[in-house]
Image (cartoon, rainbow, N blue to C red; front, side, top):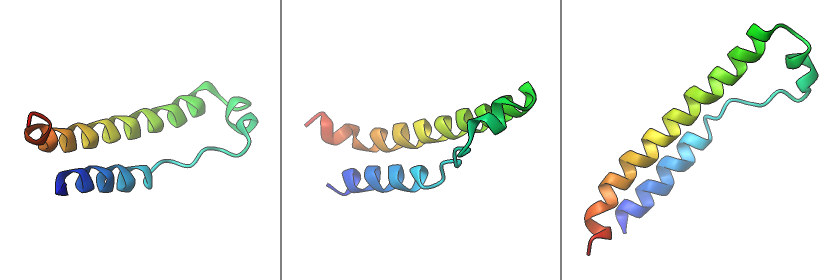
Length: 67
């Protein structure tokens, strides 16, 4: 049970660190491709961090799932 709580806690803490979306995408798309690339790179980096955190938590759950 504790492992499940840790999984949701980890997911919550990672989700709270999400980069904020631009309110007006025309500010991003109207500027250079480099700016758009930087915004998208930040999201890709954050998504990888979330995936790693979830995978790590699921590894801890594995013994409980096999029961």
